[in-house]
Image (cartoon, rainbow, N blue to C red; front, side, top):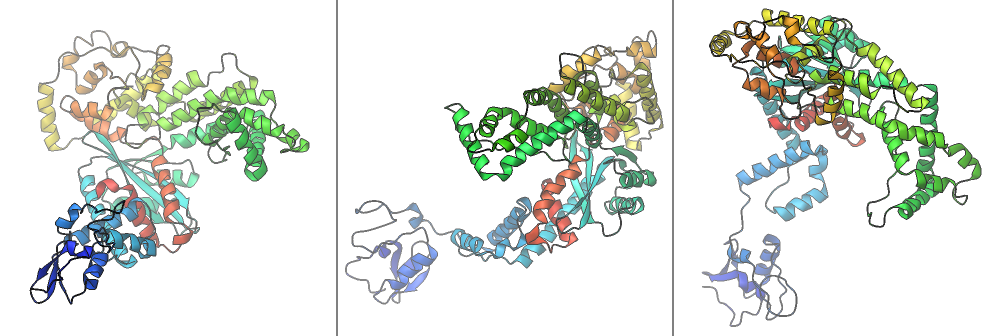
Length: 627
């Protein structure tokens, strides 16, 4: 036994017991230490291995640090063995660091930072922080595993749709991102296929070669239904040259072109220019910015504790930034006016140039609901996890018939803007001919149980779309096992079929009233189209005809993909056709959303990232559900 002192004055003895051969044993970790009539080694052990234990070394003190001069209570951890950082825990921590790097888009070199090393030493003293090279290798392994999981998921997908768009990094390197969309168990899935560097000229032939290579690499041959892209000529020609899928222009780009036509009008152009100069003045003048904050605080409600809002500058490439600028100017009008009228802050010559007239302020206020409806339409069609392509024409016709209708007590500027945008949108979108119109979007609307009545189209276009869908239905060849299920489903099909739905349904609650307004004006009867006595003989017709008599579903209560999943036994062929077209997104926004992540990944601090690692980091960040 170790020779112990007669009086254990030091607090370190609260954590050690005597052992044989002049040694002591730590109660916390069971480690043996030599005891030579000194507590120095014991105290050093506590300080280095047990950081939560505070040893003051004063007479009468015991346990952890506390308040006051009296005895302190011993922590429960003093009687619990310390957790060891074994190989399993070390591997788990390293994996979580890799996931954090991809999820938060951190630079790979952050693991070599002194601050991170200090943090990990405090949290897990026995853990050795890996080097940048180790983290890169682990991320490459995670990327390979993720790609294998994605390929297994694609094997079960019968149809997929892709979106593509190009972007340029801060290092002036060109990239093209391709995303994939498919239906899985009644839900729409979205993932990033790849982000490849474009070193050659962006000709239609080179872009087509990159698209073809990506599809072959992922084993998606004969599965791609459509490619959604912007309206750039080279991208349009690249998709048309492949002839392997439908070329679908991005609705968001089309709508932006139409809105830009209205914003470029003389009066609107001058108003936007005046607002831009006004916002720039406050952005470049420190004195004006400080004065604006003071006026905002003086004019706000006493109970409002939120920080003052800054003015928003518009951007030429994003039309919705004009709406943001107008909204902020309108909400801060009186604070802005007060600053411009204060001669201690704004010179008279500057005020005459910057001040907006009452007509300008009235136009801004009148334009807000118009621009807000256009933004709502863009947002509704830019989703990735719900069906959007079937909403293109219902929303387009709602915009033309209601939101861009110039009837009412409006200013001349607003009327001219509405007429210009409506004319441009009608020229670009109105389906006068099925081949010239967005055939995929129209067929998707017909296969969407919310909009299959097609009441937003003329009677002639309704007939053309249904005939086109019938052609697609009759030429569809199902796999053998599906054909067997088709025969069983046909034998047990429902005999009772409801008539056409009389009430319109839309993509979201906010659009329900809009579509319903124009549905009442353009309703055509399916029974008239198919002839008298159709309802009585519905049980003798095929599933396509039974589908037309099926009741529409409420737009804000049920997902069309869930509806088709439940009706797969009743409509086996049509359900496959629905998955083919409803998986197509309405816009190429999913590919464009990658740009924001890429801007954080490829920055000035990481300008030497290889294209392979750029692709790896973007894929790991965007496809988190696969790893």
